[in-house]
Length: 292
Image 1 (cartoon, helix red, strand yellow):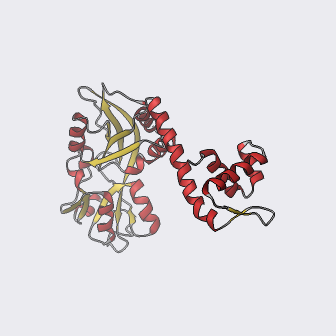
Image 2 (tube, one colour; image 1 turned 90 degrees about the vertical axis):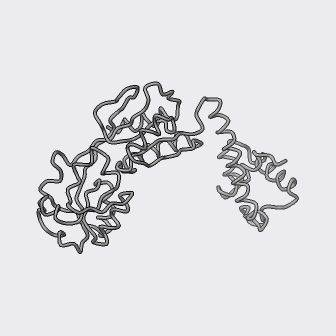
Image 3 (tube, helix red, strand yellow; image 1 turned 60 degrees about the vertical axis):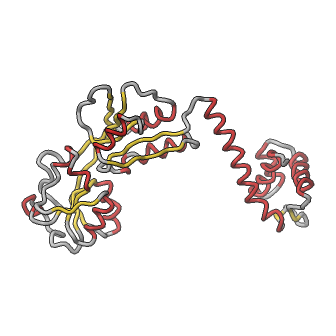
């Protein structure tokens, strides 16, 4: 059986360029590193380095074995990390729901922090309508949901507001609406509006359904694509629109008013009052709600 420490010193010697640098990195003597590499070579029955120059250089055998050794060391560290997670009571998986009308961009920073803090966690994200996510939460298929703020928690549920996001109008650069300084709502209403399907059942978004004629698709990316084809205009979250505006495939509409109330919506994290918040889930909820 191969010695993991010998593999680690072999990998370090390759990456640092010398046995001396590897010894310094691991706090070992040069003789210890040389002995470890020799022991690995003896175990394999192959020389891994060309030692004819000042610094050892991987030979054909070493070049073939190096990536496999890296993978083996990674898997070894992974096993130890998973074992430590179980010993610490960290859950092995989390399932959260994110409303289709809530841009995934709003939660991506929290997900990055989660991945960095708990690299072994298995995360599943359910995208669905508000009604679908409510059912999933009640049936414990998800631990929490990210939805538009409703202002009330309801029986046996809690919520925490975590961010606001702006709704903007978009159109194709080829649209007759493009370039108009101020587009009135009555003008927009007379042109086809492209909508995300979930907007029709979500109370927070219904104020943005103003077109006399509408087409709908499942997600905002689909909405943008139809707008790019000049098949209509749309009202979508600014965080979704920004990258397409930067690419020049859509234009922002300069509107005098977007909705009857406000063009800013709020999002919240909602979860059962009796939810057992184990470490990883607690971390994710705390990082999301710190974004306020």
